[in-house]
Amino acid sequence: MYQVKLFNKISKAGTGLLTPEKYTCADDFEDYDAILVRSAKLHDLDFPKSLKCIARAGAGVNNIPLDKCTENGIVVFNTPGANANAVKELVICALLLSSRDIVGGANWAKTLAGNGDAIGTMAEKGKSNFAGCEIAGKTLGVIGLGAIGIKVANAALALGMEVIGYDPYLSVDAALKLQRGVRYTTEINDLFTESDYVTVHVPLMDATRGIVGADAVAMMKDGVRILNFARDGLCDQKAIIDGLESGKIAAYCCDFASEEMLAQPHALCLPHLGASTAESEDNCAVMAAQEIMDYLENGTIRNSVNFPNLKVPREAKTRICIMHRNMPNLIAELSSTLAQHGINIENMGSRPRGEIAYTIMDTNSELTEEIKAALKAVNGVIKFRIIL
Ligand SMILES: NC(=O)c1ccc[n+]([C@@H]2O[C@H](COP(=O)([O-])OP(=O)(O)OC[C@H]3O[C@@H](n4cnc5c(N)ncnc54)[C@H](O)[C@@H]3O)[C@@H](O)[C@H]2O)c1
Ligand SMILES: O=C(O)CC[C@@H](O)C(=O)O
Image 1 (tube, rainbow, N blue to C red):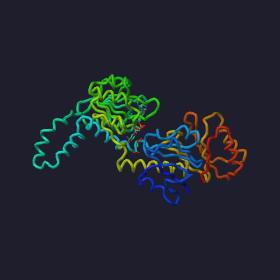
Image 2 (image 1 turned 180 degrees about the vertical axis):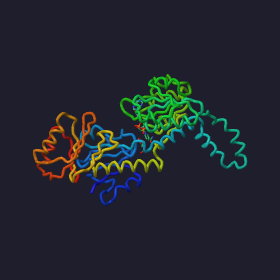
Image 3 (image 1 turned 120 degrees about the vertical axis):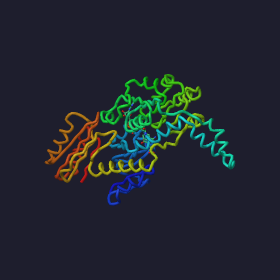
Image 4 (image 1 turned 135 degrees about the vertical axis):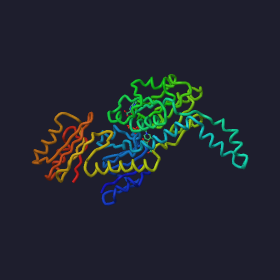
């Protein structure tokens, strides 16, 4: 029986796959095999020795201490693309919200209540306070052409915008999904100088923190509109507020609220709603639950952000899963350790990822405690698990 600790409200579409015959899901376990999480911060959590994997029902993994997980042989998964459409739709909404004072207009219209037949005339009189501009014909700069950035770029093109995309790590797969009309640039400054709207869709890491900072804002067109539905730290708060206060930035629309930003009349802060649709919550939870099940039951790793992906067809009753350092001769040492104990390997697979690697070996032989101890003692082995 595996125990899965839930750190957020996770859709039943996913938790329902973790059937009671094999799994217990709860939020109050002490020792558990897996974590299923959305945005809860795990940096200060003491992981139990029993923890084997963490599945992030979502894209961003900056709420998870990746280095600590890798050092302890804990596999971290995310759910690439599972919430991309939900975010894309909210970004399209934000393009419009940043162009016209829809929220201000709707709030003002509510204040007309009680004026009966006069409401129509009053609305016509006051509406000019909420006028704006159209997005068609304007240029949108998309920073980050991953699952979300591609969808945003293609949708904006379909709405009649010119689109410039920037992503120094653009994959071939991603490039093939981009509509031909999207102009790709390798110079982020070109995107900053040419765009009427800038939208950010990169992960938050040291390299991307403040990617939209004071220098970038200074380069932008007067009256630029900036959207951030990725992570708060990607747009430097001071640079955005200075830009809003000077009028350089006409509007900032984001998925994160802070005291300072909420005080800005031309900033619109949403409470991290990008992935909050029924469809996206189901998609993420299903993918995350499947990743956990496949890893716990078969040792298969897919969509990991810290270990290599590996799937090996099961060809014997006992499966040995070993997370280890990527060092010369280590795999030979593992197999010779087994050979010294008369263990035959029926099937195996191994893949490296930077400094670490993952190896699966299948055998029909009995593994005694002595053999397990000998495998664990091989220099470079981080974690070792037997699946029967
Ligand atoms: N608001 C929300 O609810 C919500 C929902 C989903 C994702 N997100 C955020 O959006 C981010 C993007 O999500 P995604 O699903 O598109 O992820 P993704 O991994 O598919 O795409 C990220 C892209 O960023 C690119 N990139 C990395 N570093 C870059 C850099 N320095 N400059 C330009 N591009 C760079 C990568 O090459 C990749 O193509 C996530 O990391 C997450 O933080 C927010
Ligand atoms: O789970 C959420 O609501 C947000 C998820 C989002 O931030 C992500 O990175 O996928």
